Length: 291
Ligand SMILES: C[S@@+](CC[C@H](N)C(=O)[O-])C[C@H]1O[C@@H](n2cnc3c(N)ncnc32)[C@H](O)[C@@H]1O
Image 1 (cartoon, rainbow, N blue to C red):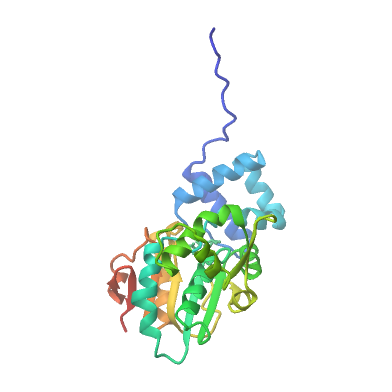
Image 2 (cartoon, rainbow, N blue to C red):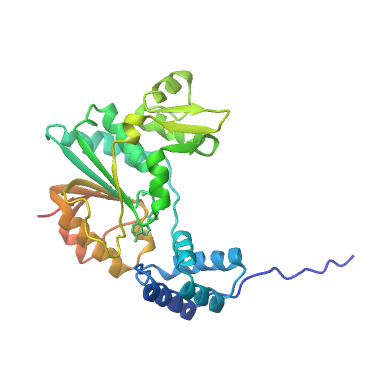
């Protein structure tokens, strides 16, 4: 029997001209500016958006011009929010053994997480600091372009089943374990969060939840809104979505707002390229500010 293949309902192909017109529409009708984002990532997101809303490019840009609420919805769909507890555990082990102990004698520590998404990176940092007895003297700042993810970070409540495998990272980093979650490990978790398997929830403890200061902050256009300088900036898996020029502007912002000898940590697939790299000394995986 011959099976006739039905064509899939693909949206029209998103070409560079469409992306440019989309970027211009957003820039002209809001405070957002995505002209410095990488075309590859925008093309992927736009294709998904057109499919989800069953629209073509012209219809999308027309509605963006006419409907500010719709524009806000689309902006939130443009950014990727993937995050995990102790994402890339080997990096966190180095933060624990090589970086944080150097702050031990400081009277206070200031740490900023730009692009913090739903907060798992911030909770990972706070758990490490608490484990090292350094949380109390640390000030934690979290920011993101998207207020919805900040609200989730503040709430500190996550799906248990979705995050279950990431708890193995917790064991690897905090308990030097092999990643198998024994009962002993579960006892250790209780210091930081509770697990309700029936309601499928992990709930961070209040003393962690209420510690960070959060602000909506757009790295494209906003200055440092926290009005302090930082010993450590953890900006992981954010600049990967930016083009070279925007990356350099953001590095400049970070350099200006790090204390002397402050440290910047990027994601495993991110790095500072020439010529800006000369403003930092790279001590893998850390970038130390050159005065
Ligand atoms: C992939 S998540 C990274 C989360 C976390 N840092 C990690 O590595 O697990 C990227 C985050 O960057 C945020 N973001 C994207 N563009 C931004 C901008 N212009 N200003 C601030 N945050 C931005 C997104 O909203 C998203 O929450």
